[in-house]
Every structure is written in C-alpha cells, then in structure tokens.
Image (cartoon, protein in one colour):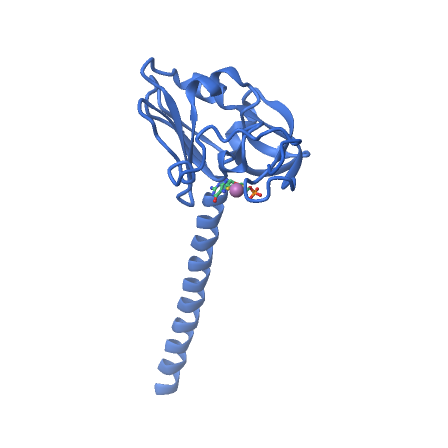
Length: 190
Ligand SMILES: Nc1nc2c(c(=O)[nH]1)N[C@H]1C(S)=C(S)[C@@H](COP(=O)(O)O)O[C@H]1N2
Ligand SMILES: [Mo]
C-alpha cells in the first residue's frame, strides 16, 4: 500500500516536472522568436504614430541600393558590400505624417545604440532605406545610408522618431561628425 502511494507520488512528480520543462522551454523559444521578428515604432513629431513589424516592411514600396558599408575605424576596408533591399526611410515617415516642427530624425535600436539624421537629408535621398535583405538574403532590418560612415547604419531598429531639437546618437554625441560624410576614396588618410 505504502509502495503504491510512493509510486503515485513519483509519477506525479515526473509528469509535473516534464510538463514544467516543456512549458519553460516553450516560453523561452517564443521570447526569442518575438525578439527576432521585431517591431519598429514610428513616433515623435508625427500626426499618426504607428508600429510596423519587421515582416511588415516587405509589404511596403521597396528599393534596391548597391552600396558599400565602411566603418570609420578602417576607412579603406569595405565591410559589407552588395545590393540592399528595403523601404525608404522617407516612405516610413510619410506614412505617419511628419509634423512641421520636425528637424532631425532620432533612430533607436534594441541594444541601446542610437543615431540621427537631418530630416532634410532623409527627405531628399530615397536611397536611405531600412533594408531587410542583402544580396537577396534576409537580414535583420537595418539602415543603409549611402555615402555616410557605418555609424549611421543602425541595426536592430526599434524606433524612428522625428524630433524638434538637435538629437545626437551614440557616436555623434561622443564627438564623431554628425554628417558622417565619407570623403572620396582618393583622399589621403581617409
Ligand atoms: N544597433 C547597432 N547598430 C549599429 C552599431 C551598433 O553598435 N549597434 N554599430 C554601427 C557601426 S559603428 C558600424 S561600422 C556598423 C557595422 O555594421 P556591421 O556590424 O553590419 O558590420 O553598424 C552600425 N550600426
Ligand atoms: Mo563603425
């Protein structure tokens, strides 16, 4: 009789334990999944703030831009190269209706990184895109900013925010040039 009760307890613990492990494993997986999918908020000085999932970007007008990513730390070594596919930042902003008092665009990432662009720059350059593919392969959406150093090419974007003041991102506020314009490749010491 006591053996029977003992066996029952063991069975309950085993089944309960297995159930717990499965549930825990499941919730960990779904947390990673939701981080990978990601969401971008378009907020700040806009008429109609909205959110778009990383997957949702593919349903908007897209553009291909062939350009090289250079990091300012090794200015002559191409870091990433090819054809980037994505949505013009301007299109994402216009969907929200940009308010007249907007002056810069602050960009935020899930790792705490930030950068910024002048709204006027974004509005006149359709090749500034939130890219979701490189050479036809899906990538985690990141900004592509032709002619500017890699520190403008923010990855893991979580928010795009027109602001009315001189917002400066991670490296811009540490003293790197805010325009981040890459000098011509023939420039000595580039
Ligand atoms: N979220 C995020 N984006 C970022 C950075 C970062 O640290 N965090 N570094 C920037 C810098 S300084 C460079 S040179 C490029 C490097 O891009 P890569 O990692 O694709 O080579 O990413 C930019 N985007
Ligand atoms: Mo960089």
